[in-house]
Amino acid sequence: MVSLSSYADVGSMAQSLQQSIDAAVKRVQQQATGNGGATGKVQEYEKTVNKSAMNAAPFATGIGTLTKDTSRLNVFSSLASNDPADFYKFNVTTSGAVTLGTVGDAGVRLQLMDRGGKIIADSNKDAGATYDAFQKLKSGQLTLDKGDYTMRIARDKDVPVKDEKNYGVQLRMGNYSKDYDTIAKQPAKGDNPFGGNTRLQGLAAILGAGSASTNSATMMLGGSGGSYGGRGSLLNALL
Image (tube, rainbow, N blue to C red; front, top):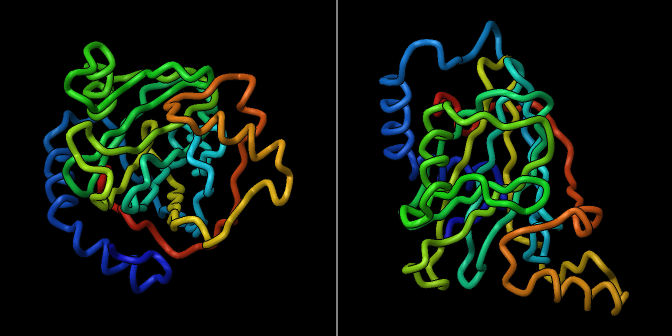
């Protein structure tokens, strides 16, 4: 697997995904005029964080706030071998149509959930209405209400959990003038968000027992780290 431990490594991974990015750009260019884009000089920011060692939605990595005609959110990472899923959270400040773009390896599944854990959109073709919603999300035709959301990134059902998968995801609402990149590295070795508190460790084990969703009772346990520093968009021109 390509390491995300340095900017050079990230650049190498981005280059390996160039073909997917080019295809995504072509798709976006074919969309109807008015779907939005950069306005004026775009301010670019980047943060590098370690994903939580706890594999559950309440410990999702924060990627920022989605503000209409202002911000664009990008996250770039990988599913390590035997890592079942990654979780990311973001906030929407006002109701509006959101556009999602993805790049990366085949066999990656994306699910978008609301604050209560309900799946709103699902990239799995067998997901029925939520798959239809995912297609609308990709074309900028799905409206999200103001509030908190979580993305779950996992493998398709027929993909072995040992297979490593690289991916990039991008979100915007209309135009944007600020670009926020999140480079999400694998958890630090020996990372334990609960220290020696065995009661909290037991609770985390329950929360992480294969659940793909969250609820209002567990959202209070959420958290993220890292701070932004300007460098530029990793997925620029995807949307």
